[in-house]
Image (cartoon, rainbow, N blue to C red):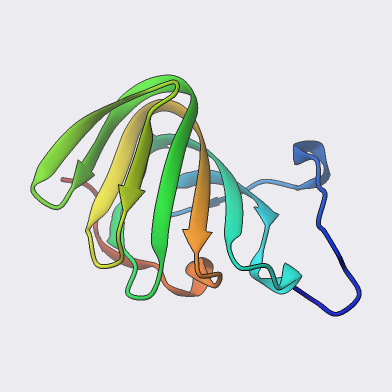
Length: 119
């Protein structure tokens, strides 16, 4: 964390969304904040298959339903489900999902490696 901030507080309405590999993203806590992790709000309908070399992700499904491919496995997603995605695992989600993603360590947006449009 930077030297002057003792904490970070943000509201989702303060963050302008943009489209990236997983869908519509709002970085709530981002790399520039200097925190130990990043926290992103995502709206996912059809993410592209990708992996991260240096970043682990934890997906918490806030609302909606869908599925997630993780290497050779597939899991169901719905409100209240948590999925841990270790670095190196190829993954993508699809459906109608609102998700909170915790990325450890920070810098995930520089660590996205797309491998195809889908499974």
